[in-house]
Image (cartoon, rainbow, N blue to C red; front, side, top):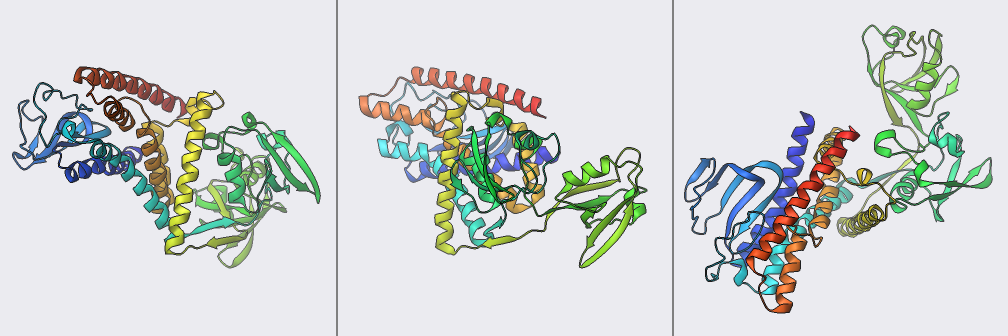
Length: 451
């Protein structure tokens, strides 16, 4: 239910902002916007000044006389603004055999048409940059001031590659890193799809390690390749009548060491506990400002009965930005994500990245939206900004039905000084719509497999 709710909120916001751009631009250029729809297909309910609030479809011969019908439709996977005199997602061609009216899309000049078609994309870009700006100005960035690996689990991908606990990363593919955020960015973003050459210090000796991209686990499914020093196991919840409750562990406790071994995160804690079923272990616990020593005995199943996560106890730095600097940083974030998106598309086309790992459909979007909301409003807004940027970039691509496809037809008509026949436009849009539906089925299928 959380997934459904957050998916509806996310898609609703993005579609509304995008279509609002088209709607406002149409009004500004003197065009009629007959319909403002969230969703496709059957009209569930809506409002216009002529009929008021009504349920179900309007009569087929309904004429709003310039008044927009604001509606919610059955399929919540998008939306559209029906602009008079334009072949679009509504596939309405009743105007084809009539003389162009001054309020119709087809009677406007190149700049006006282009403004209306691209306004949705610009609104999505504006939403993304405003969220980035707000995050930079009000929150800033918190970076982890370390590049040292905290713990390498035996038989993990990092272990098989040759990393060990305590390795201090210096650079990735020749780019120096001095905090964990930069390091993570070089591994997963800047070098997306590429093999890595990682330089590091081990016992004060500089070494190099080649990391094939195929050896790096899917961060969504299996977590990160390496984790930093400074993380400690955090007790999120203690189960009733569990060994942990009997030992005196409480929610909020941080486990500093276990059986004399300093811990570097929950994976190491789980590893030690699972290998000591029935054996009493001495645990040093940080509880607020106090440090306690407790004795806990894992059950026969190798568990102590807690829900565990991680708390970073190492050094951090908070970077703050002024009002105008926040805009420039937001612009840089937008540019970096744009480059990353097109780089990802090119690698999908070349076969370097599998489609199912690069494209998310409604199920995975719902999952990501719910997870980002669990982190807090800042996390959800950041996810919304990234998705808004993605929607803008996808929509501007020259594909039938999308804004970029409409823009290409406007450019062709301007160059040839002839309007493309309505039947041809309709055929192009129908073809594009069918292809998009096929692609959506494929993406949803991959979403289900990824669950």
